[in-house]
Length: 416
Image 1 (tube, rainbow, N blue to C red):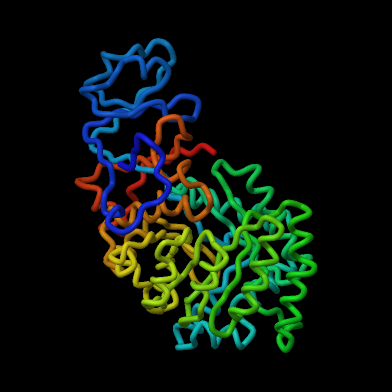
Image 2 (cartoon, rainbow, N blue to C red):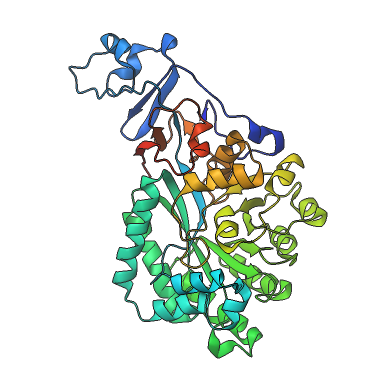
């Protein structure tokens, strides 16, 4: 599933409901790249001179004495590894105390006003060494990979000072170099206002624009620049200024938008040709109209809505309106402490009415687009890196997200 003859950049509207399916299939990989695939009855033996995945009944067609690795995948499904375009996995500690506050009825905004939330994570990160941050973040990354993730974007944003934001981004750079999957870095100092700027919001924006962005650019630490443009956080005007400053240094904009209200974040993101606008629990006609015809991907994060008890994004309505939608985990300690993209697919279908095919496309093809990896990741493509998931035997693909707590991943193949 998800195997294409030519690169697919992104899928929109009705296109998202279709996944190319090859039944009774073979797939060959050599030196970390896909060298071929198709139906068993059409299998050319030349593809299996070096490696192969074929059923037992066809092994007599292959020369297995020359180092060929053969796997029987009968009853299993093979589909592209997930492209998780929104994570915050570089952090210093969990926040289960706030979890209890949420249970007692406090909202995300109320917890933030009490000095919790992102500020709590910033305090913990400030006291943590770069080495420890790297080690714990890599543990989380491998957990994601074991759950089927083959490419990932990681954001800063728990530093909230020049020193600590640079520390986070250096950790992400090291992860890029050592992780077994493709990693993209996102500069998100505009995640919240630090305590020393609680009464001088524009002053903190000045710090980001005049000091942080030039330093981040001088070390080549970020692929993207991001802003939390929402009610109680950064205004449209402040967002506009930071995105413009980042773009001058080659950082393509992305935005946290409309998680808490109709904030104008989608519109300012489209204005700046943002690669994606993320969260989108609140989307109306004006927002859909802004996205239509743009190059901006609408990325939804149902894990955060689930954990915070917030409204889910109207992703189905956006798809029915002909838009592109991506799914991501938002893996972070405060609002989505989960590495499971499988559960994200389940939430997308159960709570947002996406079909299993729509959810898969949103988490693979469109997820890759949302992190600047379109046409390379999120699909099985001849000549490209082998990044795919092999399931345990299942009765149908829909069973993968239907059985939402069952471990159904047998093997994950990744190459960056």
